[in-house]
Amino acid sequence: MKQLRKIVWWIFFWTAVFTALWFAWIYQQIYKAERQDFAAPAYAIAVFGAAEYNGRPSPVLRARLDHALDLYRNGYAPMLVTLGGGSDPRFSEGEVERDYLLSHGVPDAHIIAETGSQNTEQSVQHLAEIARANHFRSVIVVSDGTHLFRIRELCRAQGLHVLTSPRPVGKPIPAQEIVLRYVHEMLSYALWSLHLH
Image (cartoon, rainbow, N blue to C red; front, side, top):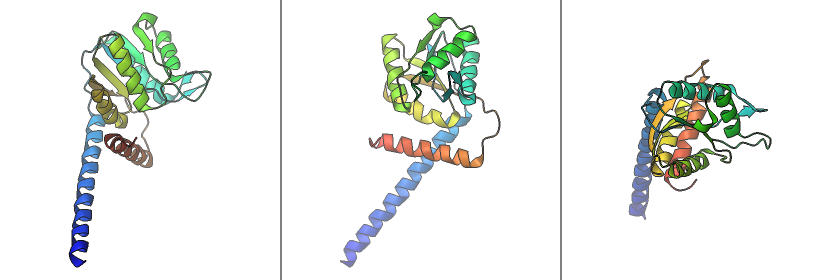
């Protein structure tokens, strides 16, 4: 019995060590993706959705769209893909994003709007379907910095070549919100990796 307890203790100890190291690695990957811009020429720029208010993009979504517009105008990609459904039956994030891009001079023929996804995983699945239908693999992904590592890994699992480009941060983000974002992304990535999400 004493030997069994010792074995169980060592299993628990090394499991805890491995788990701590794995989450430290995830944290480091999120941190690196948040602070580096890998934008390079690609076929499309994909803007991941965020909240919209009565048909208008929230400040976070507008910042993502403005960054995507800068990339588009600087010739990084000829197409823009807008992603996101949302809870408002009158408006989808993808439609609001498309309308914003149209109002800033992007031709409708250069925009593909996806309007049904309800979370990051669905957005990536729909992006992969759009890529296959339009015969491209390379895409610049625009979102908040802490979101990009998980998006990149999900996209790679779908066979996409991903270049991440974080939207600029405007006003300082409270430390508590940063912690919550990191925890959310770390747990979401861990659950996805373990096929539990």
